[in-house]
Length: 268
Image 1 (cartoon, rainbow, N blue to C red):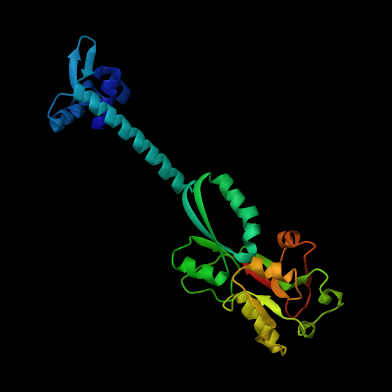
Image 2 (cartoon, rainbow, N blue to C red; image 1 turned 90 degrees about the vertical axis):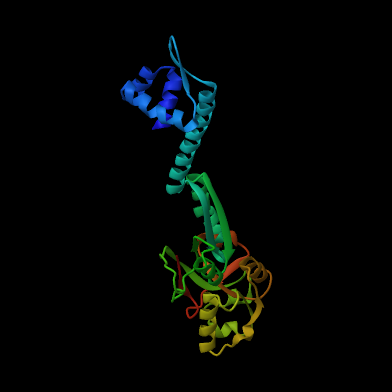
């Protein structure tokens, strides 16, 4: 309040006009300015025939007080934007098979709606993303959810995508009218690391039908590597199949419908 009264008087070169602006009496404005005189040990105004004028020290104070007020306004604006989610940093984890979909749908919208934000994206398998969220290294992740979520994490289901056997276009399996698990036995597979939920489920199903783990010929922490390899070899993999995925790999990958291996993956 003291600085507001001081600035108003300096701006108008008049205590009476400062009082009008602040809806105070002239005595109240003078009473608010006086502590600044005592604090700085010198007068901040001199009287003139037209009102008051800042002394040299008063001019220095006015300059710095204006800078401080502008800085405070900027800070309040930035804090308001951060509170509204318009600025600040957001750290997002994205499941490996969803990276392209999330880039097209979520990130493009986020960039449009939050132009002042700084976005960091970590692409990884769900097991790694859960660890990063739990450790506080990510604010949230969008990925496939396991049947049992890790401790200390909360999830909100968003949608479901279908997991199915995927092979290259023209693979011998595509020529079979109604393929079953036994038709996979001559072929090896490409898969993510063993702690990835989708792989564990696939291996459990294969094992229950007499297929052991020697099927995994290629293991990678990159879905892009897995899918590129599958698209140029006779390896198969269990991967999500949704509209954007199908469009991305059109002409290179095909789905094989084997009822025992088909499952719905919850994304959250």
